[in-house]
Length: 414
Ligand SMILES: Nc1nc2c(c(=O)[nH]1)N[C@H]1C(S)=C(S)[C@@H](COP(=O)(O)OP(=O)(O)OC[C@H]3O[C@@H](n4cnc5c(N)ncnc54)[C@H](O)[C@@H]3O)O[C@H]1N2
Ligand code: MOO
Image (cartoon, rainbow, N blue to C red; front, side, top):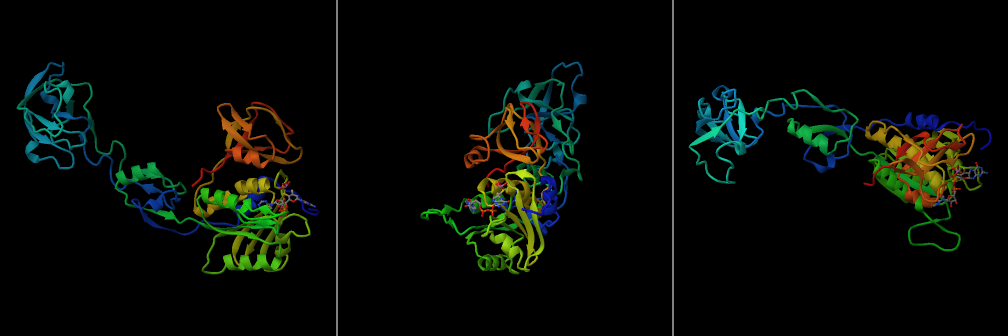
């Protein structure tokens, strides 16, 4: 692409991110499974304390420490009452000079301040479901009080999860326990995915000279894994009018996609339909770029009827790495998720890298670090074996074992 000064990966990513902003937020109940994976639009703060009341941490007998000799001498106490989880402590159990049979999680009766586990008492064990038959119990002071105190885990108002984090099982556990019922989350962004090329045919069809449209399925899988809902258009022929009408349709008001992603048609060929459509005047904010990276040099950005459009090159490995580098951060920003930082991972073996361009290499992560995936290099078979992409700086032409590289993990399938 003559006349275009190559930019860095970071520069192109910044250009992409400048075009997107988070989708709107709304309240969703924490018992709705659809909340899982969505980004928090606000911090989640504890509404109530955890625990909400002083309670027994063991099955046993609640006692008043003042009734037990400090030197550990056993005493025999009358069993005054029986308290169970889920009911408030009966004021009648607020006795002193006796022991109260108590089960784990039950509120500690007022005036009592420790629990002696049943196995350390003369009772030995409780019979499951059995009635309270003990009239007295012999027990001694223990080193620990086995009481979980109000707010000892979470004080009211404590920050449980930050805006930009995804709602996951741990967030649900902490928030629900702390009295939170709904969270403010952003809906999943909607992303239209299409590929361009007159040679492309849908899955399971084809003839001489045709190519299965793997990119639109691959793009859809990555975009979905990153948290978006995908509108997959599939392959569009190398025809500017056809591509223009597909873009008009997916960006029509009410159709409401938040982002369009296309593969192919961005280099200098006679049938490079994206380049052709970008020149028609319908597209705004057109940015045809060359990135000093291998693979994935030709890239383009535009806005179509107000919707941001990221165009990645058609070579399937180029399309894959470009999607991970540029499209997935855009999806995360639209979704309201905080940026996924690169890991710093040592190379487990050495490999060569082109001079003057950042190399984006599919790798496998293991205990010794990153190893080129599959047969190495930019092959589809490497993608099938990869769990991350390593980014080798432009000024490095030989990676040595132990060199620490930025590594982007591929998203888990959803
Ligand atoms: N004269 C130049 N030629 C090329 C340049 C250049 O700068 N000057 N750049 C090269 C680079 S780098 C790349 S990458 C490719 C990208 O070209 P396009 O984005 O226009 O991609 P296509 O030509 O449409 O396709 C390239 C290749 O990938 C196959 N392909 C495309 N789409 C799919 C799909 N959906 N599923 C499976 N395979 C697909 C396609 O059949 C081609 O083989 O341009 C270089 N050329
Ligand atoms: O850089 Mo192209 O993107 O060679 O494959």
